[in-house]
Image (cartoon, rainbow, N blue to C red; front, side, top):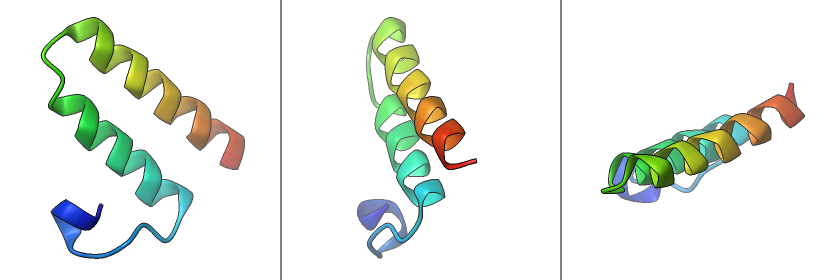
Amino acid sequence: VLAEEGRKPESVFDFVQGITAVARDKAHQDARLDLEARAKKLLDRAA
């Protein structure tokens, strides 16, 4: 979030966006899916 939006994450949604942004840079699909699954778990816990 800091690198893309110029501010620190302030909410769970911000952290989830940051995780998925990192996942986009992963070369291997399994690594991307693992990170995105972790982001989903975080978002589910907050809901």
